[in-house]
Length: 395
Image (cartoon, rainbow, N blue to C red; front, side):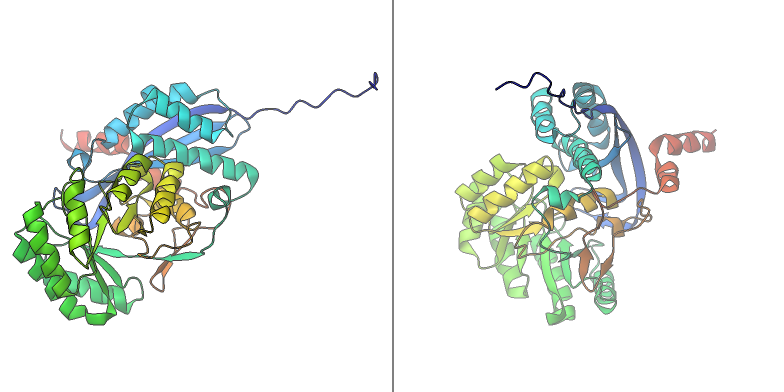
């Protein structure tokens, strides 16, 4: 039976993406952060702000380490990819169709994972705010309110690192420490690690990150010596492409081998797992290509029976909040996280900084990322302001 007097159906107004803005921030670090390929004294972040047709907005961040010395994306390329390719393709589309936006970005631009991550984070943040739920809820719900958090000792000086670690333990901030090594001879690096482990003893867990610096022969010697020194884990000891070498090291040593630079999304995760080329995955949302792809990397690691670790690109509090939202949904992170990025910077750009205490980092609460920016800090550290100041000073 047809009702001729039926009321017309209500048309739902679709919220669309109105505008995507980007800004580069340069924030000094509290000390030199020594990597095998560079020494960082400033961290640069690309912030994304997406404005939607209903008046809501979402925030995102894309951050890399050490400019182009670490990977194929730089802060400048991240911003250019967003402004030139990603934003024009997305403006006018449904704000709630995050999966569709992810697929479109993959068609519009190959690679550029960090640029895509920054936009995707802002889309998830906006969706969570409109629905009044956290990003963690959008990924099934948080099962943790806080997560263990490591600190990286990267001065390169044993006594300095020991003093720094002892202060962290005494204040209850960190008891998991990762040492950046790989710039010196293997024997020198191992001796450095051994001194720190001997000084801290059982009060701390000691791990190292080689950032791909060793040859296979060096890694064979290094892993054996680090194991004897009490080190628990070695991150990316050889080149990311050398999966056969990674597999040999994983088979041949009791010390855990962690893949990091070898993981650029789920395809890489499947290859590493298939070749048994790691014991642990360092999952980074930016390196994976966004929260969704990082969740897929997590799923592959879980299916392969590998350990998981929440990695960082030394992001500000904004992207750290995004990573925490995702990792809070992961049942087991056997190796904890290293989401300490905001603590390495001289200033926190969030209105309410993320909480670190009792050797843990707390997952932000509230809709979306649970994070809001401090406008005065953003204005002070934005690159275009810094350039004008520098130009005046040089006249």
